[in-house]
Length: 357
View 1 (tube, rainbow, N blue to C red):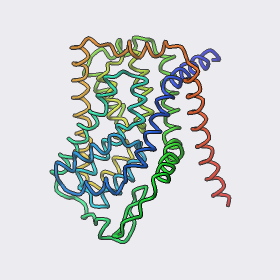
View 2: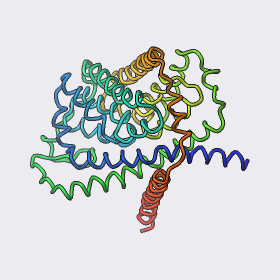
View 3: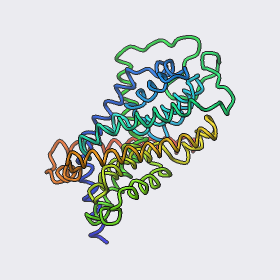
View 4: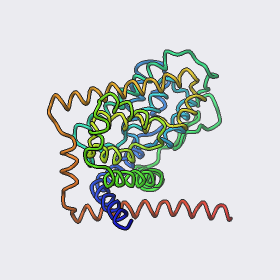
């Protein structure tokens, strides 16, 4: 038992060492995005039921570091502000599937090909989903744009009424953005990231190196199983990456890993419920079918690319895991771990004080 715990913790520490510098860089990028990309500007470009609005929504969602739970109120807020159903659905797909934080950790734990393909696949999947949903007739009551309503919307970070808000000075926006990234966002994503690292550590220690190659040797069955596993799973893009990396080390094909990385963050029970409520039942069917179909197609194509080029993704991941831990990597790991623990303790203490007070 002691040997098992020690082995799992060792694997978790290796993964944390590899990913921490890139995760800190990703959170820094998230803070800068928060400071320089006004949310009202995003909503302003997504109102038309056009291909252009869907493309913009898919593109806007790629770098935003919102997880599966955080994107739901943001997407509903955009819908209430008057964004078209296709554009808001595209935003709901691309945002949790990618982000500056998950792109950084993909580079750390997987390989350059997957780092490039993952956001491109998210953009393609979101665009296809949004265009298909735009072709459906409205099932729900028309949404009143925010400009025509005096009430606030559900999106975080402020929706504007008829009076344009005063733009804060640059220094304040930078402070607010970094405070959000290393505060609220870190507390939200951090615990899921640690859970993902724990699952990855268990898989890395427990499964033999050829497990997936031996039991999921059939390409189509491996893609389909990863889709079935990913759809109901409640996991964010950053937390899914170490799990995917651990499965790749155990013989999972890169295409099947991509299916897991696309389907897991974009679909879960909460998201499906919200899509049904605000987009309609037929839109929910299209939403799930589009994500499933695009994930399987892109996973198959990615496997073809690796076979054609002769690249071996597992060799890249193995090379990372065999590197000696440097002092900056250890400092980054301890800093990231300390920030996650501190922010979650603050949140827990605040809730306890509010409950008792």
